[in-house]
Length: 223
Image (cartoon, rainbow, N blue to C red; front, side, top):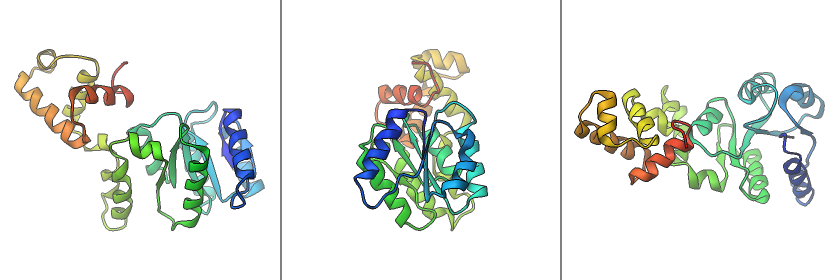
C-alpha cells in the first residue's frame, strides 16, 4: 500500500509494481486519515508513507499502525533527506526510509528487502545513504538496540550534539562569524572554534561551508 498525496508517484509505484512479479500493489491513499481502515480491508504486508501529507500527522499515524497491526511493516518515502526525519522514522518503528529522488526500482527492491529481512532491519534508499552523514549509524544502532538500553541514542547525528553545540550550529547556519557567535553566546572566539571542531567531528563534516549547509538542511537555520 502506498500512502502519498502525489498522485503521479502513487501511479508510478503501481505501474512499476505491475512490472515486478514479486510485488502486488494493493491500494493507494492520498493521506493517512483512512489508513487503519484500509489496512484492515486489504491487509498489506508493507505500507509506504509520505513524510509530509495533508491530514493527520504521519508519525502519529505510523505509531497507531504499528500498535494495531504489529505484523504490517512500514517505510517512509520523502522528498526530504534529513537526519532528524530519519531519526523520527527509526524511533517510531519504521522498517525503512527512501528518498523520492530514488529510482522507483530501487525503492521497490528496498521494499522487497524489508519483506525478506528479519524484523528490526532498517533499509535505506541510495540517496538516503549518500546524503545523510548519520545514515550508516542507523544499522549499528539497530544492531546495538538488543544489547544496550541506550542503543537508540546512537541513531541521529544531532542526538550526539550538546545543547551548546546545537546553539553554535544554529548560529553557523545563519551565517554568523566566530566573533559574532562568541559575542552572542558570551564566549571567546577560541571557545567557539573548539565547539565547531567537535561538531564537525561528531557529524563527519570536513568544512564550515558543509556545516552551514547541513544546519540549513536540517531546519536549524534559515536558508
